[in-house]
Length: 277
Image (cartoon, rainbow, N blue to C red; front, side, top):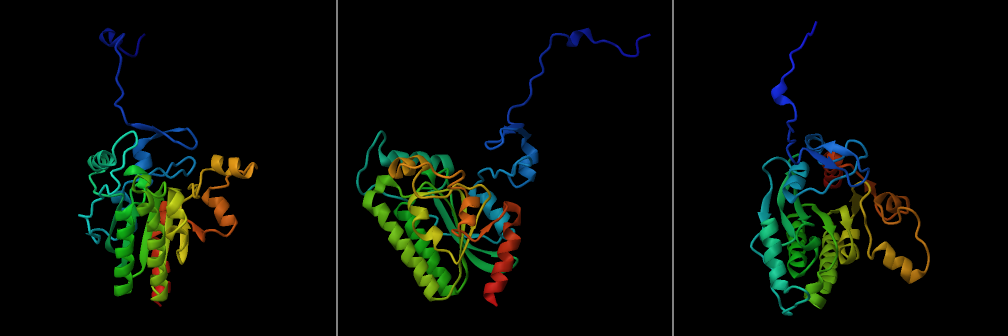
């Protein structure tokens, strides 16, 4: 006796699964339900890989809700060298602005963490690889100056490929400019917390990003100056396993902490309370 009825009309039909429900982790290669990752602050629940997140998501995770006020949003890059490689620089700028709906690769402003005021800067890797050109350098300078003037701690979240080659020496000068800004902040005895996300490379690593009073990195973040292949070709030696990962840098005293994304706000709150005391 059959306890079910067979629906012949359903035979041979293909059921379409909506796209975007699942994500493949870049680290462990496991396929994970997208909503599960989003609930976990864009962190893989299987291997703890930290997926890239937007500036808005980063601010929401770090600051009190509704406390962020952006500064100098109207600053936009120019093309002083009239630079052209395969594409004109001005066209690259327009493409990046249309893609990210932001004028530059960095956002700065003020906000609070557990009601404690801070100055915050966040890189956007989606904008030309988060590269540091003249506008990014100027924003870091202005953020540092306002932090010193108000005596509010400065927090910068870096995710960058380094200096922006399309601006040539003008871009390289931002390394000295931002380092000097951070030095003046230290003279004013105002703390600077540098947070390194994946990846942080080139002129950003070689300047302000490694000058924080406290340097924090996300787990397994790639941090360095030149790529591993370039280094190996230069020194003619094979590099150790995980040479440029945050865990290796912590073991060798280059950074102070590795923090999971979900623990960042509460840890920053403790640090802010300590330094304000």
